[in-house]
Amino acid sequence: MKTLKINPQVYDDLADIKSYISEDSAEQAAKVVNAILADMEKLCDFPDMGARLCNKVHIDAKYRYLITYSYATVYYVDEDAVCVTTVLHLERDFSAISFK
Image 1 (tube, rainbow, N blue to C red):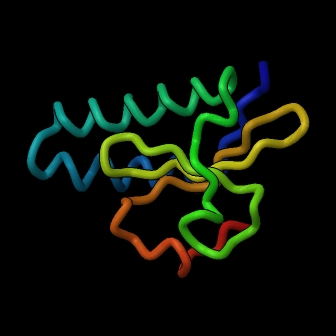
Image 2 (image 1 turned 120 degrees about the horizontal axis):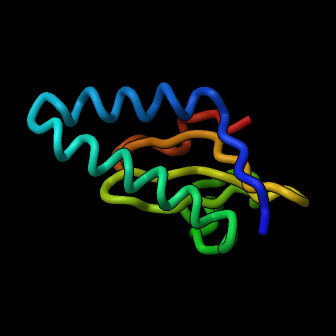
């Protein structure tokens, strides 16, 4: 089992997602954010469950993404950890985002 390392930016991403969805439903916002966090935790046991990001855009092959609702959790697998770098809406232009 690998440890989960979360980039501090991810917490800002989740707060933005929650804020946006809360405009319509606070209950749904909590449901979506909790589901994203739960899926992140699953990555510790199943780090290769996400699709390779290089299949979607031309980017370093180490990155993968996992879809929860209409959001993608972008991460890579290190020797002993799963490192989550960002969470973004699927309609965003993935190629315009720096994952470094």
